[in-house]
Length: 275
Image (cartoon, rainbow, N blue to C red; front, top):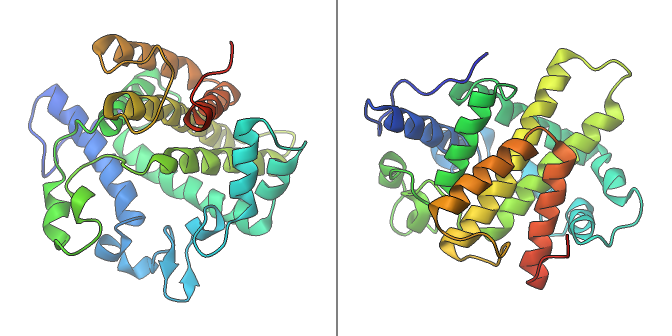
């Protein structure tokens, strides 16, 4: 399936740029609708793809701290900082609850991605997605007016409900955690002959992780949330450089993961390691 753009949308016009924005907005809107805004768009899930509802915890609680700190969260941070023991992250990713959670997120995101972008194996699709992530990361997509109208001013989400972006710095790395854990769980469960479906999912994970690497860098450089690589500036040259690097990383999951780990180290320590 080739790359595809949303043909229409409640906040889109008819130009090619508007169509690209419509695809980006639709993708991130639907992703948020199943997670942070589940109570508005998918109350039937009872927060399954977020932190849950009442006494029923959601899948995200298995990956990031809420009441307790999951082992996989600590293991990923150690891995990113280069201080983990051999196999520690993989062991945590193989836990039944963790593997089930990351696999369910995999399926959810794969369906959303295909609806709005198409086939992650297609270069035009990869380019369209990475461009969308850049717009999302730099908070330059058109406003989310429909969603803002549904969120009352007293809601803690009201400040960001009208924007398609990410203000929670750690969520870039949580996304990486999910993708890396899903890749590890899939590798552990894979047979000697991988199916075409499994290969396609792997291509999508690599693209999504590349988007984390470029999006996180753009978010930090453009919006000043944290430190990033010194060569990144809020300018067209950096945008072009990130797209060029992102397209390369999108074909190699391990390289994309290594770049995300480097960005996490810079976030923590303030200076890149020598290359």
